[in-house]
Image (cartoon, rainbow, N blue to C red; front, side, top):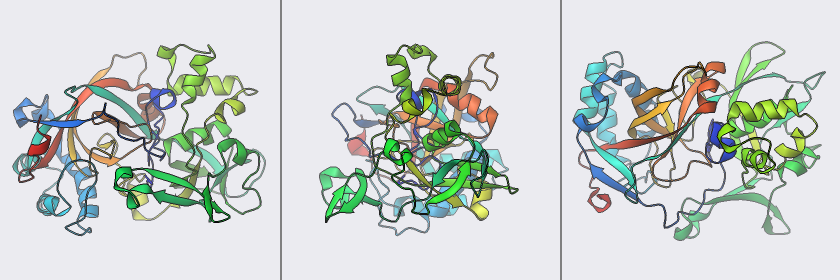
Length: 410
């Protein structure tokens, strides 16, 4: 992420996004250095060990996988996929070519496809199989292409002088690390912070892409990384992540807990939004504590009709796309998730979440080998689930059968 879309690095809005973990539909932030505390290991498994494997609608997962394959099949066979899993794009080509001949409406045939071409491996972090799973969604905003009346909050396109740097291109030890800034006097300097941009640091550069009617909605869009804007002029357009200012992301839920506004267990997307809306005098200063700022672009065309775009550059599929830490997990990999998720009815009990997903996104707060962010779709119901999801779970990575991963076996 930089991500191309929704969650580029999506500090997702889920409870933790603002508190400590979700990632923007994900907003790209410079990824943290992998520490000694993080170490991906694999344990070979069998499909009948995966809880609920036989009951899933595998054709839905195949639909998401085909979107990733469309991207992968255009890559050079020797291209690295990222993460710590060995192998290149060529190792996944056979499965992708075979997937294209399957009918996504035939769930049994889709199941057999995955069983024929892949082998499941439990993913562990230093021997621990449990990790945190959160959720994110695509918000919808009200906006106008011209500033008028209530439409006075600008969303900006990427500035021409913004420079992003992948440090791994210069030093192998910094692989996966990114910074952003602008060149001043021949040296790369930090880009203006959220507070500086709000104070007018970018005024007069014709960077305004669209105006919306709510500073809170705009802030949440920065967290999610992309969304839909219903235009006053008619119709709706998807808006996607283009870049970030490279400043560090701060989860404002922590600030609310620190000041005693709410307890840790009360922090959710919904509770943070409610506080911001109920405290209009204090809300701007709180939001400006998060120095990270996101720039956007319009997402149009056929792919935009399919869904928001994730870090892999493919449309995300509700309930089947998973954001992962790409320092460990390659994008485009099938993953069997065993966790729980909130019900869209906040008064109802949590429900088991056992399904096949595909790693298609990432986020600045998605950190660690066993960590995921589930994309729930667009709209209020999706937001209800995503905003309250902060559950422990585990997953199995499905890897091509002929891939040699012995070095990672636990």
